[in-house]
Image 1 (tube, rainbow, N blue to C red):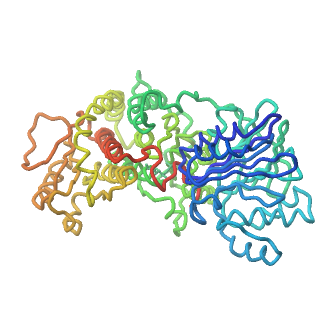
Image 2: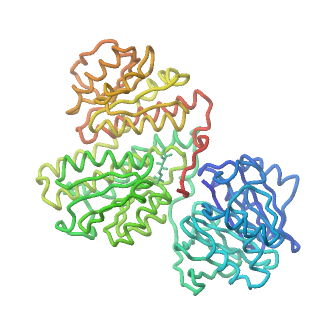
Length: 606
Ligand code: M6R
């Protein structure tokens, strides 16, 4: 999704802006641009396509200046094109914008009547002309305040001004925005990652705030223009995590990192000596929670669906799972005894953030399961459970999915023991088995070569299905999502028991169907459902776990066996071959694995 960079310095800023835009490439985008201020003029260079093209254009058309803004755009209003790329500029003002201005048509009509001429199809251009209009009769701060008050929707903005050669204005409503501090220069970024190569000293704007950034000073203001004080945070995490190393793609690296990320997470939350959970500061008592609502989008939603099975199995809590974009507009029955859990890798997903915000406004108990601990969702939640995965750069979520499931499973055990829903022996046993998970995941990664040899059957097909029951159903959904987003193949995840209620009609001779049937309590039922699709011509890839018992079924096309584990932990293992299947299918097609078409890593618009 869109990304913003702004730099004010005592040296040339274009090279550093390009460098930071490269850091934002992982978010997914379709055009890019930069504007700087030099000798009293705003100059811009923009392009459709990647930052590489922008850099080439800049070699022909040098952009000088000690102050500038840059942007990578993921199209919402108007097609991906050079004209629609940001920054958008008038003679006086240049703007980069993340988010959507919902009343842009009304504002555009108002501005056209005032004589403003529009070049692009974007909603962003109204911001440029509004500020330009208000600057005719107001000072900078008033013009900004007046402009912001007219905008409906969500935005993070970076603005430079022809007549203010020493400052950048940043403003935030909904979409995240960070300020970074450097030596004789300061920065604006849509996330701290964009600024990472320049500084680890960061402040975040809260919703409704704006800031004025000069090279040696930053001032923050609330929505009424009153000055506010900000904490400067020092971020950790080494730069090396952001490199691919010897891997061709971040996704491949991130899949292979899973044994390590699981180990790190387990070390953070579990005590090996007592076989218990180290979450000491959990803010609520056992009689304060009687139900739990798990909310997320995409892969994070699938981890919530998975957790529902564990919560129902291990605790006596009532459990509901919701897609954030549905939850936020539904007429919810808010309940003081409900724990609302928000799951998000980035911690910036607009719908998940809006759902959290809604719960906070209703004074509910909110907890987030996030990877990025400095994110908006983490900062706004009453309690945060990090998944400790390190940066995930590939657009397709892999290690974060396993991390989310793991933390939700640990939370489930924590609530179960706190509420006496589980006896101590059982609790210690489950925790003990978690200590072997990292090794099991590592061994299961060895299924890679088999999967690689099978993937050509998933490349040029009309569609495929992923079937599972119980614990394997959410994993089937996740496996189908991975194949869709990476290999652009239609894939549907379905509860195996539902096939005969309609989708069986889709099965035809040779259609690849992935059946997830580990030897858990659902195994026999799933195998029966597998027979039904084989009988109708499906080419079944069975994913199960190693076991000495024979599988009583004929005509299975191929079988991949993951390691053996407890029923609770098998979902982690059967995920691995599905991640690899999507990866190798996309690789075979020559697709852009880390940046699939039309997608963004962090979905900061609704
Ligand atoms: O950052 P989040 O976990 O909130 O992101 C949610 C989804 O956008 C994300 O999981 C998406 O579905 C991934 N591309 C899936 O691989």
